[in-house]
Length: 250
Image (tube, rainbow, N blue to C red; front, top):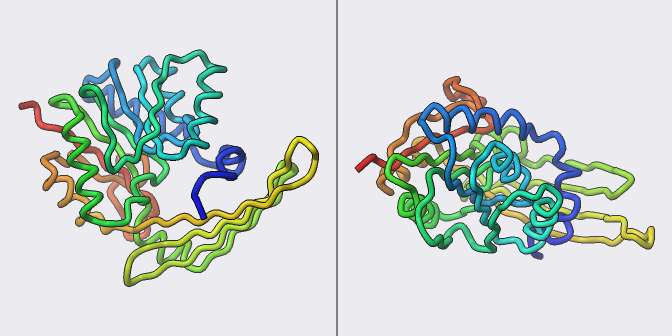
């Protein structure tokens, strides 16, 4: 089963509780704090382009990378409506390529957790360094091991809407650190009938210290690790961690 096929069309509907505005404000604050007020910014795992659009609205020249053609189709429809000059690339973040460097790279909504192997995650961090300007920032979030163990675990989430419904089953394996999401979706089509889709997603939980070491091994500097999109310290029960990194100035 593929990920983000049938779900792409209703992703924003079922994820409407994600605080994109709050995250955008935190990201803009951090970029501004480090003197990055304009220029090229890349979003890795941009999905349907909601954050990409927010940052374009703030004046940045945006590039969005995602490996799901279906998600990018939605993003490009959003771009057509907004009129923003956003470049979308269908690429795997594990081997993304750009024509040059960018002032900042961001990745939100636990996209990094989709990288299941430490070696591959280290490779992503090395690519990030390669495509960052000197002094450029890398801002990303990850779901914590605590969230997978204590919150998602064996949890089943179900939601019913007029436009569609889904059943989201979670299975967490503590040995591998991998959380499996099995999605069953019923999406209403123009005919009024509902089509059934099934998808399977995998994410891995990483310990914060392990992530910090990989960042440093990739040649980036860790400026801060915070509880969610705040400036508060990471807590034992933090469910989402925000990491701020920088490529050295020389």
